[in-house]
Length: 308
Image 1: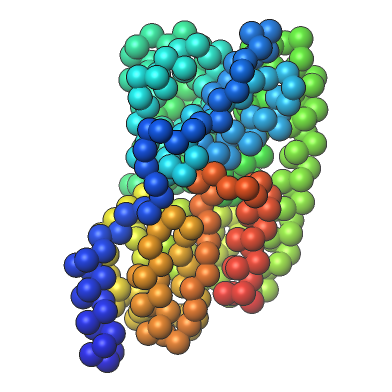
Image 2: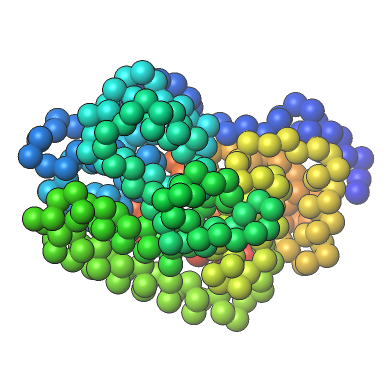
């Protein structure tokens, strides 16, 4: 490793503790619209679940996005106004597996609506490398929460939303399940495309943070990470970068992935050292103009460039 690269690594490890560059603030407008009390009042915790809830509920449901546009949901905490908004809702749709760390406080404050844990029935990857199927009694267990990045599990989340809507509004049960079934077919097609497109490619890739374990598990890939946590915040030391550079060379990797909301300098240093390039592999946590299937297809195209 040359002197210039070593100096760059030291500078990164000292000057740029890796934090998300998304803009935080309480004044960013949320997706709140006027409500019709004859409809189910639904709050979805973050963007993929907001999209899924809209697809399932359509005109029968008023859906609000809880985490504001531009805010990274891992660290978001509700304001008093947010809590008041939640208290008025019929259902709050969450990812589960500890992703929404504010849920327990809401329950303790006697929330009268229904909390819809979309991880129910999904086998989670636990931090202690043990697996457990999530149910109501384990709604807030810790583990890797990034289940939505596996289209097979996203389909289960959509089905859980449809079931919850149907239980709260039995009159429109067929409507909700029909919408969920139609969208599930699109998720099935996405799943099939990913399987087919990656089936003959290399398996090892370097993601920015530990977000793609369920995706890698589903499609027989091996995820390596720059930040070895399920949260994109984390410190990267010079030793960490040296290890990643060594791993990339060992595995003949020429693409280093970054994310939309983190500083790309770290990934670029690694890419420069191995004579490679930086592409985006999105965890879909921040609101985007693109929908779930479009974003996942973009991820697939970048993975194909890296692996095929």
